[in-house]
Image (cartoon, rainbow, N blue to C red; front, side, top):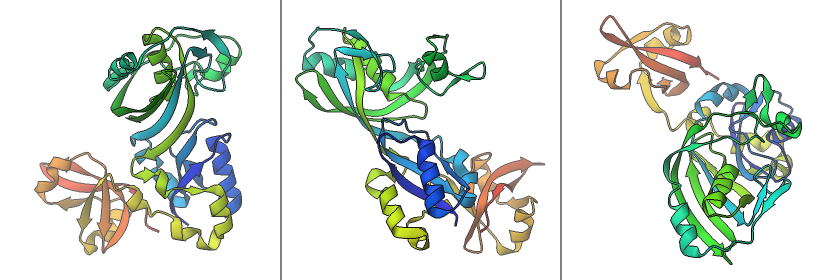
Length: 296
């Protein structure tokens, strides 16, 4: 059993817990998730199963989509609904202010990772240090907001919003930053991940559904590896080169492929997906070299 399942993770469950549930249901050890989803968030959590665990590195950088709620007037130590309230404000803001400030959070931005995160400092996770009452220096990280829009504003206090962003973006930090820029405070009071690349929430499956479906029928909803890698270009090679490629040899290809040099590609041979490779240049010629042989 090899492929990717578009799982819907419920609130209150860690990403690791979700993996554990699937391991028990399917009786398969090799399962890994793509992009950690916090316990208090729900939504899309793609899981790679079997040989597909070898393609995780090609999926973790996919863009993420969320619908969240920003509640104003309160700041928490974790920047979300599970944290301890550390500051409050009675300041009122109007809708024009909200629209004006939120419109600024588009494109390339610099974001300071929160203390309550799984990032590490000298080998220790930041949230572990935060629980000890420690606050260490962190370096801002470059993120990108591809799209962001306000869905609804309730009493100029609760803002429902949609955001499409790059890997490594903390939505709760976004909420905290917006609250501060509005001259008040804010925290993330709700979050659902609606998409990871082409994995959309409308096509996701709950753990309960998978459990009822059973291992025998599970493969019917399993996404083949090459389909999951649809964001990568493909290259088709002649059948005679099959053995050479899967045994680690390089094969010469048309020079027109030079423009795709050093980009990861889905490699097909004899109408079959055989893995991920790259176009490399050697002695002024172009060749295909396999990075991951994934023949089932």
